Amino acid sequence: MATVLQLLRDMIAIPSVNPMRANSGEAVEQGMANFIETVLSHARIDCKRQQVAPGRDNVIGVVHSTSSDANGLMLNSHMDTVPVDNMSIKPFDPVIQNGCVFGRGSCDAKASIAAMLAAVIHYANQSDRASPVVFAAMADEEFAFSGSWKLIEDSWPVSACIIGEPTQLRRVIAHKGIVRWRINIHGLSAHGATPELGRNAVYEAARVALALEDFARKLAQQEPHRLLGHSTLNLGKVAGGHAVNIVPDKCVFEVECRLLPGQDGQQTLHDCEQFLRERLKESVELDFEAPYLIDPPLETVSDAPIVGLLARAQQEELGSEKELDGANYGTDGSKLSRAGIQTVVCGPGNIAQAHTANEFVEIEQVELASRMYKRLLANWGRTQ
Ligand SMILES: [Zn+2]
Image 1 (tube, rainbow, N blue to C red):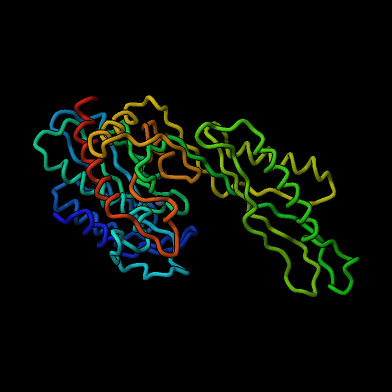
Image 2: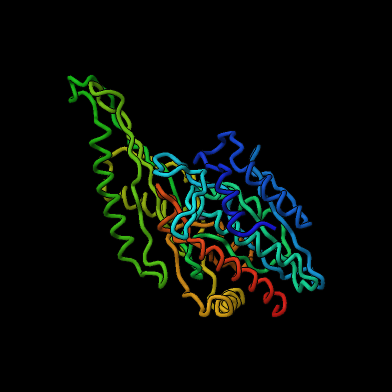
């Protein structure tokens, strides 16, 4: 079988760039899905696909147990990457330098996929397998998490899951959720030479922007989560006006809030709208669109079996357990958790190198991760 490093390099060479929009019609993950399916099939692991969108499939390998058909463990990571514009290296050429592999997806998250694949194949080759193991490679994690929403439509013989994301092998048991929506601010169009006949939507929008900043400050004053701090708001995009000689009749904001466990996206949006309406009274005409993305937060109790068993696998393979941590980015994990599967995010690489112009991962991290996953799979079924 190929080494972890060879698997990783092969996958970096397969482009799987998420176009970061819905219904693009592109077969983003097809090359990756075919590759993973071939690797799993060679290891005689049962493999299935779930169509997430035309040309875009999740690939799922199931290693059956020799004694139990429930309470198994899932290893899950994603096949898509962020775009490659403005990269300073060749994105699909997996160059090795100074103990690192470079390329788009090297860190986020093909390192995790390679380490997990090697561990799952190793487990499948054991004659005594105490519990089922599911390896799930997801489509569309970077844009809408639609792969993991699709995954949980079916049931899997697992009670716990590890999500492979670059956490430097820290055990991330909580992360924030996301709500994204648009705010339309309305004005009245007029000739640019007679602005007094119109109502400039961009001036109105400036007032809304300042009120949003106040709302963000209010969020920062709330009780912080012990691993995640407080929730945040970002006004990320502003679009207004048609031409320099026309008074703008409309300005559109795109806003996102990062939510703490226990916070609800709809409720946060509602609170924000109420805050703006009270602050601005009737002076500004605005409407809130329904959110175009709501992604739930993740929180797994620190005494869940998977948290402890992962620590044990780390002690045995890395010499010591890695700290419990929180993350302010979203992952597929919150969907698994929603489906009642206790989930920890833990994978090789540093999030600081994900999505960057010269993305890379340390080879040692990937190899350590693979050993850690192997040990976890060996221990899991014996203690369940
Ligand atoms: Zn990722």
